[in-house]
Each structure stands twice: as C-alpha cells, then as structure tokens.
Image (spheres, rainbow, N blue to C red):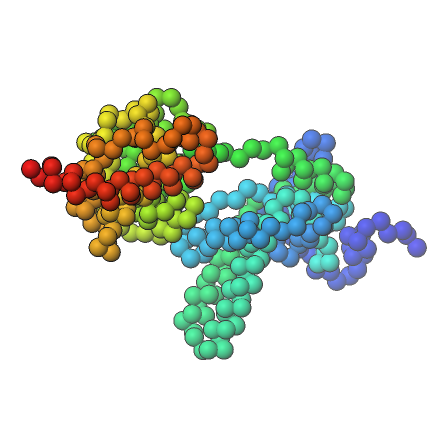
Length: 375
C-alpha cells in the first residue's frame, strides 16, 4: 500500500470528490509560495479556520465597530474598504497549473493569519440577518423578507482580497501575525480625524474651514499630530467646538455625529456655525494663540456655555446666541484660572472650570452689561 502524505492526496485517489476551486496565480515571495486571489465572503466562510494558538481572542468593541462599518454598505450602499485577508494552507490543497486553480477538498481548511475580526464581523452580520429573516417569515412580513434577502446577497457576494501562504507552518504563522500587527503604525491625531468624511461634524468642519469670512481662524488640516505653530486651531478642535455649540457636551459624548444627514440639515448648521465664529471674531481680540480666549480649553468651554444660552427656549436660537456673545468683551480672561491651573489641571477639569466661570459671570453681570450697551 502506498503511503499517504496529505489529506489532499488521500481524497484525490477517490473517484468522486467535491473541490472548492480558488482561481489565482502562485508566485514566490520572500522564500514562500503564495497565491493571491479575490473571493466572495460566502466562499471565504466555507474554507477558513481559526487556530487560537495563533490568533488572539475576539475583541467585542472592535467587532461592533466593524459591523457598523459594514452596515454602511448593506444599508446604504456606501463604499467600504478592507485590507486583504491572509491565510495559511498548512499543506492543504493542490494547485492545478493547467487550470490555474487552487483546489481544496470540502474537509480541508485554510487558517487565518490576519483578518479574524473582519471575517467575524461579516459572519456575525450574516447570522443576525438570517435570524431576522426567520422572524420575518414567521410574521409573514414578505416585503421585509425581500429586503433582508437583498442584504444577505450583498453580504455573501462581497469581494475581498485574499493572500494564501501555501508552505508556512504554525510557528511561522505566529511570527507573521506578530509582524503584521506590530510593525504598521496607525495615522493619528489631526490627520486621522480629517480623513473621516462620512460623519456629520467632520463634513461640517471641512466645509467651515474653507469659509473665506473666517480665514483668520486658521485651521490646520494637514498635520498628523498636534498643530503647526502658524495655525489657531486643529481640525479636531474645530469638531469639538461644533459638538459643544450644537449639543452642549464634550465630543466623547456626542450624539449628532451621524453617518446619515441631509444637505438641508448640513447647510442649516453651517449657517449657524459660521455666524457663531464670525461673532467671536467681532467681540474677541484678533485670533492669536497668545490670547487666552483663543486657547483650546477656553474655546470648547465657550461653545458649551453659549449652547446653553442659545437653547433656553428649547431650540437653537440664533438671536439669543448673538445676544449672549455681547458679554464676552467684558470678561477678564486671565481670571479664569488661578496660578498654574491652566497647565496643571486635567484637560476636562480645565474645561469644566472655565465653563462654570462663564456661567457664574453671565448670571451676575449680563443684565448690567446689556443695560449699559442699550444706553
């Protein structure tokens, strides 16, 4: 009896076999045989396996973010972009040079080296959609069934690039996983925020930064981290100010930074935000970081404070906002912090301290100041 060296060899000797065919060209890269191809998610689901000795455990927060991202495509047909999945064959499969296909037996699997969370997010969404389909069927909601069916079709047919290492072992997989996830560095700070152009406040901030009437409030759109010396604000700070102005809260608690909004809503908020920044330029000293009133913490505090004044009637009132900003020229900015508090206190504490200062000052002085201006 001839020896059997692999499952592929064993199954190839059978008369009736079922293969999973993967088209692609085999090439030599860094000393290893690799195959690059594009697969639909349905085919990828049928061939992948997870080795927990190589992969880390699924991080629920990361999974949830990826599912939300994929839903942009499923719900609204927005373009989404994924890096390729990296798999390892571990000796499985046979490559047919004539047909240029890599053939796997149904029992054979390819092990994930990189892309576990991406695959898990697609799979979890498929399970949720299938569950919703069963529920809709029980309720005889046929229109909903049709809608879910279309989403499932989009999900299963979603194409994704795949790189398959044909001849590396588990030890090499672990090293490859480490290299892939350790060496690259994410873009950060201002540049990372700027590149996000789907959410409401990001789109609004981009539009505002190009307004000629507030060009003196220069916004750094290109620095990866921090802010270049010649700019008044970072793009990230502008978004924080917008959240404070329209929601009266810190950016981390924002509720209105949505993916879906109308041009009418964008234009309305743009008009209000532009009027706000123009008002600041009228009543404050010329924009310069040497002035306390133009520093980051003060600007966020002002936006949150003026939100409170503009929404006292329940809706954002432009005239109430313009009335409230008239008190700003009378504020002694250097009196907000004592000693080294402006540098010693935590960022959030500095913002809240300035906010309380504005509220107290307005409560104590706004009647007298407005009376004097009326005279």
